[in-house]
Image 1 (cartoon, rainbow, N blue to C red):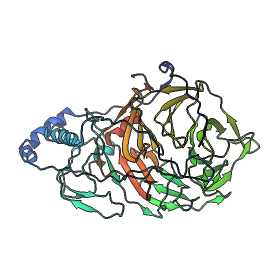
Image 2 (cartoon, rainbow, N blue to C red; image 1 turned 60 degrees about the vertical axis):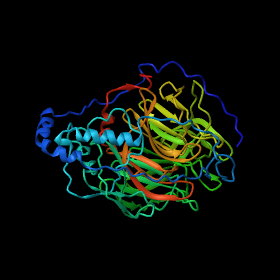
Image 3 (cartoon, rainbow, N blue to C red; image 1 turned 45 degrees about the vertical axis):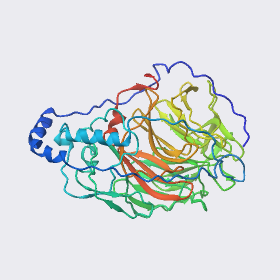
Image 4 (cartoon, rainbow, N blue to C red; image 1 turned 90 degrees about the horizontal axis):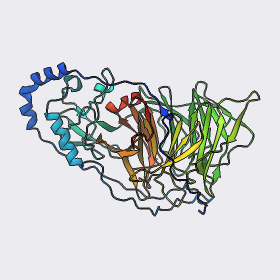
Amino acid sequence: MASNLSSPTSPPPPVPSHLVYKQQRHSPTNSLAEGNAYQRQTSSSRAAERSSSRSVRQAGYVPGSSDDDEGGRSSSDAAVPSIMVSVAAMTLGASDDEALSAAAAAAKSGARSSANKRVSRGATSEFSHRPHTTNSTQPPPLPLQGSRHATAHNSMELGTTVTDMGSTTGTATIHAAEARAPTPAMYWKQTKTWGCRPPKMRSQTLTVIGSQVFVFGGWNNTVCYNDVYVLDTETMFWSKMHTSGDEVPQCRAHTATAVGSRLFVFGGGDGTQYFADLYVLDTKSYVWTKARPAGVAPSPRRTHTCFHYNGYVYLFGGGDGHKALNDLWRVRAEPTAQGTFEWEEVETKGGRPFPRGYHTSTLVGNQVVVFGGSDGQECFGDTSLLNLDSMEWSHVSIDPPLTRLAHSATLVGMYLFVICGHDGADYSSQVLMLKLDTLRWETRTIYGSAPIPRGYHACALHDGRLFLHGGYNGQEVFDDMYVLELSSYSYLPQVPEFVIGCHR
């Protein structure tokens, strides 16, 4: 694809102090008395614990192809080429073996409170103890008292049998190993769901409204879908909803944005078709309405991003089958008296990011963080910020510049969790954490069975859990559902106010 790329301007000075993302303060508490009592009660059992054996299971890595059909190179829906961009080798934190040894040493020290440790009953655990990312120098903080994560995430108990759930066939391989995960550690699990499950799909959307997760659209490498599936996050029960109203075309690589109880679906495509229509789903009545635009509307596209802010649904970038785009549009979330929806192209200052699709746009207070993506020729690792009050772009350099496309990015407190995707050479199963106040990448030890490396999946946050559904690894389309239990990180949305980039 040939396209003229406009270079972003040089990064401006640090973000002004008034661009503040405020959140409610809430800090965990610990009981020193409980800790002392625990040490006295368990002193006789520590010698037995010190002699326990530990083993590390090497997890299998399944690299995928770098080809995909949705790049904006031509109207024939040709495959995205292999990206000829190499990522410099880097090491963040300690090795897996060092991380596990440090975790075991912390467990033996007896410093954990009895309120944060549960006695094993010999149950079989479905989670592997192997960490899937490198370890940080400091363990994460303890969970909030009274939080469901203070006990619910302790499924990896001492002395239990570990079950490997990483097989795509669903066959469990039992490993007799002693799982020792620190109490506040995050872990992956492939969760069981019930009901009418969605089929294998990629490039679908996963949107949270209330306690329900809505899946719409997607593609199985043969056909696209226009069905609506709803997951109840408490019972993990799927339902395929019967909708009425205007007919919505089958599509993939679209966007679905929650505005109250409504779902705004824009763009996408099927094969060589690219759409420019806006549909609104009332999730209470399950009635689709095709929005009549007022004025000029955005051009047909897919692989764009959308987000809701201050009464508007914003749209950025994507591809139209001939070139990548970097324009910014917005539409009022409420119709006019005539029942139309008013679109307008937004003029910005500061120099726009390079044209791209397969990127992510994450709302953080009054700013949106645009990360990664591709123009069909290059895989990007840059980060841009758009202040939605002043409509001014700024561009920040993060070392190292990690490249990603077809990934997901979810805000958890002051961290941006970037999960899976393609790095320009291979599919990944990594969880990268961008700390927004320092604008530095961090990694943490994550236990359990990580998803097979993939991209084009969908991810959403609800109740201290990150849900990951479907995707593609270059060879296979998935229909699985993984949950990343954030454990003590679930309290991060309650951290004090912070300014993006203030501690660089």
